[in-house]
Length: 223
Image (cartoon, rainbow, N blue to C red):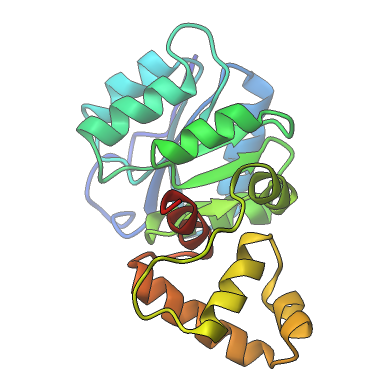
């Protein structure tokens, strides 16, 4: 299944500054909901929706797309296979993966394959829009409900081996890897939230990453 919005959006015209998005899911109701969510944002243009990853990949080979949103579980080529093909052949395309709450294995695999976001299928319109904008800007978004599960089950904190990490930064990093927010870290360490943000910023620079999630993953990978 494919629903097109191509009459104006495939040419470089007044929409050229919009974030160009396609959505892939074999459930037509999910496609309809995501299109409706994304249409609420003036900075986003939904180019097309697809019911199969194969059709979506064919489209990607012929048209410029900024962000791809794909379901994981689909007949034929699944979302993880599509993610792999896109990252190998079209690394400029950001990919957001749709997951179910209990699909931890798929979420970890997608993370390993450099997905730019993880959204639950019941995410709000605001969460979907924020994730698309963040992915387009090089960030990684994960649904809040799954963050603590990912961190607690798979990304246990380990001592940093990165040169230059101070004792204070290590304390913040340990709590960050446990899934604590900036405010919670500040309470735990009896420092201000601004100080926590400063430490996190310095840590991201030292690890060469662009988001809190990537910082946690980079720490885990040094094990």
